Length: 145
Image (cartoon, rainbow, N blue to C red; front, side):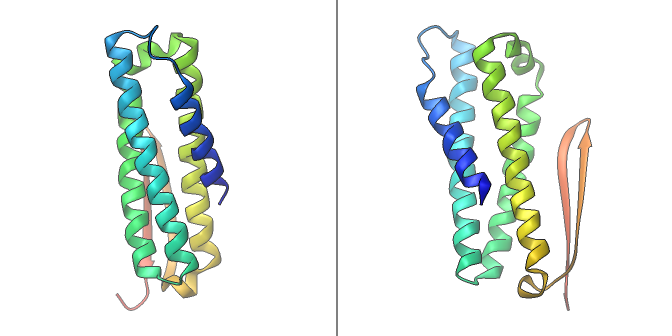
């Protein structure tokens, strides 16, 4: 999965960001983003492992958690207090990289479903992305459900 490399790179970028020049609010936002990225990385790894082990029920469960976390991060990033910090060059790059990473995760997962519909027991996968409020909705039609 391409997403695993992107999220690892983002985590490194976050860990290398010095907090000494950041305000208390910026430090709190950075800490929240770090925690969410760590959790996303864990869920992506779990999804990949479950898929490679043919444990498709567990993979679907991991996927649902990924979508919840992704929507949480989208909603958080779009808060006015976070958006106002995008004038800070450091935060702007991190937020852009975070959005790219989230998009890659969703793309990788949807493509995994697409190429393994039968194994996952799926009839169809529908993706809906809304911009206001920002969210991703994915519907899975499960066979014989």
